[in-house]
Length: 287
Image 1: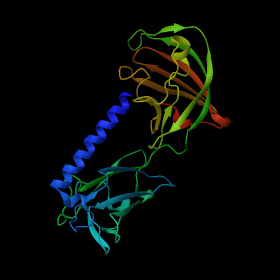
Image 2: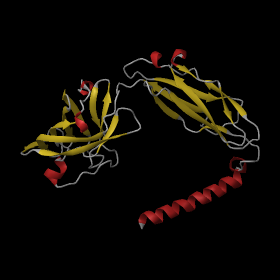
Image 3: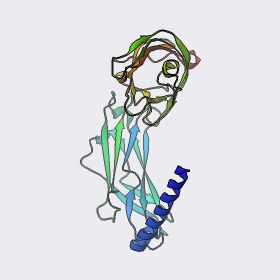
Image 4: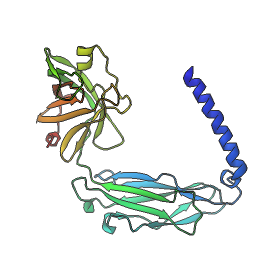
């Protein structure tokens, strides 16, 4: 009930805000009055270049319709660090007649992007002669080549030993007898090489504390594959007070060995067998 009341209140405030904006700046909200304010729809994007992914589509919007195509000049700001050899992009974008959005397609030259997840940026700006929406006249693309080359997503089988129950501080854990077995799911995120873990304790929280896993909670825990191997990221299910850590110590075919721990002192050693019996990439071993 509390959430319903909150949502209704927010809707009321939104309606009042829209009404006020329409009274003060009717040009923005009237799509047919001929007053054109331009903007990038987003301020940032990431292009992780692989053999399969080489393009990023950047949208430029306008507040009013037109019965003819509009060609909008797009500039590359000198603050960009990407070299001209690393990309191809048109110098303008077309907003078709009757539409509010034009699409600019950036194509990366894979051979020119350095290995090792070295990032470069490409900063686009709209022509100064245009009337722009405040603070929406630029778009920054981060370009890099990820080291991850295959998906780790799936439901994997674990055997966990060397359990540690913490007492409130890192390295405070005391040994807990027993062996835990089960499955854990790695789920893709929008970032290549980053996966959320459905149970970041691999059964330890439930076995030791009686707490069921809380997958994908706020600031969820996961595993990230970079050029220096795989490491954990995020928070435990207990919130902002506990940071999650993970290191991969060995890869033997379909069996991966990892050590996880938290700033509370919990931890364990896990042997993780990959779904389907496929080999894990040896590059996952943490450097």
